[in-house]
Length: 330
Image (cartoon, rainbow, N blue to C red):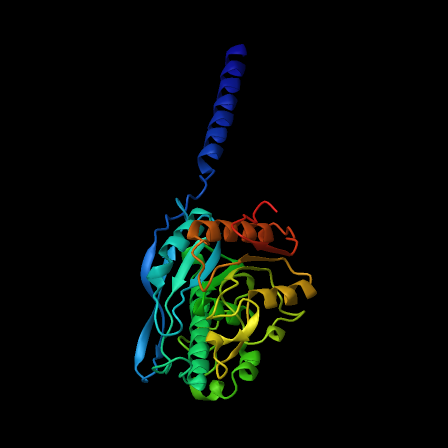
């Protein structure tokens, strides 16, 4: 009898032990995700150039080191300068690498170039410049729609989308942040009919996006009133006070009386203070258009820090800083 009881106990313990082992085997390991590697010349759309010929719209994607699809990363879209007649996405490679190393998916986009600038000073066609600005706005919208449509493939956190640009790219970035399809019809009269809506050009994607912050490097808006209590977002700016291309406060583009009026970094700073938004403006007292003392590592490290504060819901007190002073610790 004792022998049978002993064998029964051994059998029960064996069953319990097997069951525990089975449970351990059934627990799946955490998914490491697929590794993400930089991608160059990704097509995000097609649109007609100034001659009416369709051109491919391309972008480059820089991922954080060791990035995988198991995580989500904030997105930073950067737009190159060049006065709407030159420049290329490759020129933002260093900026994108710094932002990627800081934990952002950094994307540099190309957009359609071209306006009748004329042979001499102030000889450009202002109406044509408006078209160039509008096409840039269309292309930035198309790029963002494309990227958000690929949010799972690229591991983008759609809750944290930031945009930035230098010179003409700064103008496009600010326009994209503050001009939606309805506002575009007022800011660029007639171009919705002539060139198409900003939310349908380039591709037929319908994905939506919400920009949470902007970095403007010697950029400007056509009118500071485009920033209002309903759409104001945090902004970090870099600008030279001797800039004779894009005014650091307000004035005419390239100081030409017949060109578009622009509200630069300081003008937009005052507007954002009115609406209690986080805003920091770096000014170079002796700097011109693209002040050399504002080196890429300085600008992008402060940009990454500023955006990370926004992501942590940390308000940044309004600051106007002259000289090479890091705003990150302020």
